[in-house]
Image (cartoon, rainbow, N blue to C red; front, side, top):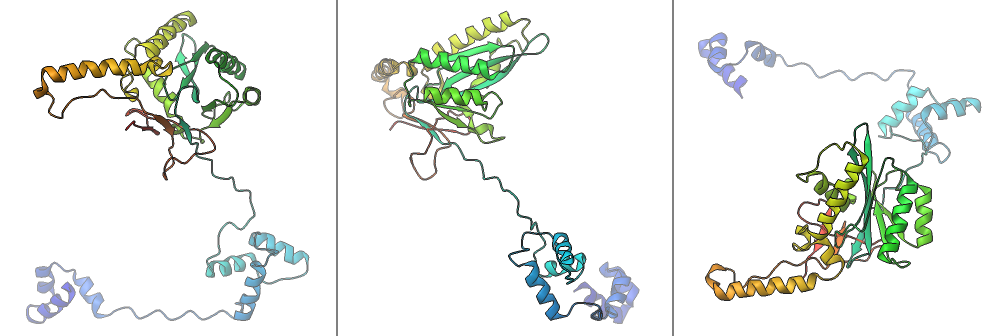
Length: 350
């Protein structure tokens, strides 16, 4: 459009003045006056394959015998049989014309990892366990922690100087015995660490008849409860960052788990402690809280603009990766979430 205007204006004031006024390069105007001729079609080389030969070669490349072979493999195989259809580059060009230049080899394809779906409607249905590092004077101590995803209660933990499958076995056996776990009652979920995937732990769970579940590779949100619990641990105000001895780390961990289980009012539990939900006395606490709020409402109803207040409750069910099409029972069992636990979902009570 600007070139056309410059051409018209140039008839009266000259090309240079018109281009200067309209800020159009003169070279562009001169180039537009003599457009490039259309390219002459390239003649087909005499050595090129004919249409029939191309069709024949394409049928060979896409045959059941050769469809999963690279052109080099096809070329070599045919030569060994005394046949020549064209060079390797010719085969590649022909496949490119049909949009078939891609991986042709028949290779093993790993199935997509199964998304764990675990649901719990009460304590001791689904446990999540993991190992975290606590920095020591010359290395790390390893804190093994088992967490009940419904109540957030920690029924068992262990501090060691190594990460070993045998230590995990000892912790699992002792915790199951302490909680009175029956056969086929529990699902034990973990990430894919070496201790979690060890053969000895798998054999132990078969003996105990405890179902096993693993997170997908490189997906920490598949194990949100343990991850969130470790964050709570390491963000405590008195967490030292480094322990001078195993005894110091053991004493700190013992005090932390006592606080976490019995004193910590968990947001995801309606401000109940994990012990209250795990051992079933949360209902009595809830009723006392309700009575306190009811009395406050009677004394000063004007202070409660939304009506009589009720205390928050803990969820009826908790999930890891809740199915999108409703409460469909999955092969595994599933968990809940609070606002600071990514990947977990909670089903609130009505």
